[in-house]
Amino acid sequence: MGVATRGVKYKFSSGEKVLCYEPDPTKAKVLYESKVLDLAVGRDERGRKVPEYLIHFFGWNSSWDRCVKEEFILSFTEENRQLQARLAHEAALVLRSRGRSRGLKLPPFAREEEGAAPHSSSESSDSSEDEGEVGELRIPPPLRRELEEDARRVRNKAVGLPCTPCVSAILEDFVTRQDSQERLVVEAMEGLRVYFDFALHPLLLYPQEKRDLPREGGPRKRKRGSGDPKTSPPSLEYGAPHLLRLFVRLPDLLPRMGLSSRKLRALHAILHSFLQFLCDERERLFPK
Image (spheres, rainbow, N blue to C red):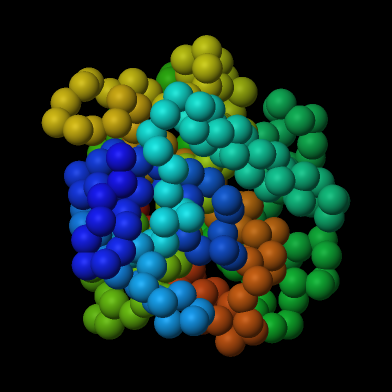
């Protein structure tokens, strides 16, 4: 039942577990398990009071908390959970189809399953349309070697989960190390987390890794506890090697984010800084 306060009627209450859409329209339309931290009052285009909610995304640091409008929130029901799974699947299919539509070569970790030729992250894209404004997103040679080591590790044994540090912790570590934690830096790391969470299973795993997952292909089950969701997102389970695989896909994703040339150049610079961070910290972040 909704509550009314400050002259505004609220459908959801503080402390309630909900599902929240990704609030950034330039990113994938996916749902996250979340919690209402507080009720707020916003204004619509006519200046009228409307309900807003301060949302905490489960598994995310509080720095990612967002104030969103009511239409972004769904009740935590089994029906909406099924919608959450369907949207994640559809978003991953869109990523896969975009790569194929441009004739991109798939990265090595998808080659065995798809039968495609290997893709070298250090080489220029086959298409010249990405050149010019932002240039190439180059993976430094030490990180390319980490990708090769990653492939060898997967062939020899399954990756133990959860990884330490996890993707979420790595992204947050990068943000806190910046001299000026600009909004675009936070948004860039948030975007990486979003793409990683829904792209991991269909796009970033070797076939043998997929076979090791539960039948439903979902995240690893977590112990029940103090309000935590029953499953954890991939960004809390996997580490630097799987995050690095995402960068093989990014050259196709960046031009499609709907950003201005100025913001795209700024984002490109941030991603290069993040790759350098991974390179500088590789002894700590990557398994030996």
